[in-house]
Length: 104
Image (cartoon, rainbow, N blue to C red; front, top):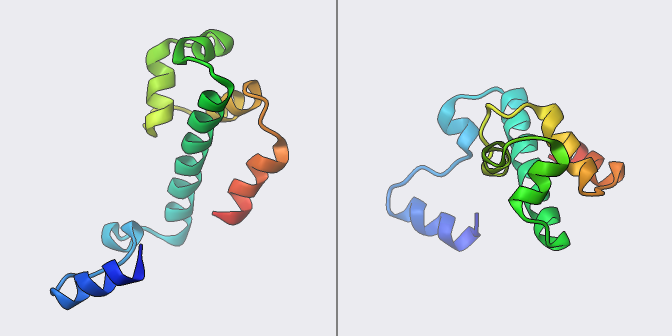
């Protein structure tokens, strides 16, 4: 969060912290959520960069388009292995995927 925004919120009596602090998550739980979130963002950005439609990615993965929509929106019903398959299908390097794991 922008420092000036944070200071303004605090000045107006709001508590400022992470979602994990608000929800009482452990560090591992927060990391897992952040990894999933970053993967979802990467899938969507890579799909858009390649000019692929949701339908094209769905066909490539042999999944319903609704599943790809759920995947990109971060729904927890989508298994992590499908997220990895989507990234590989989009030509994402293992190094780029590893960055998410190591930097999140």
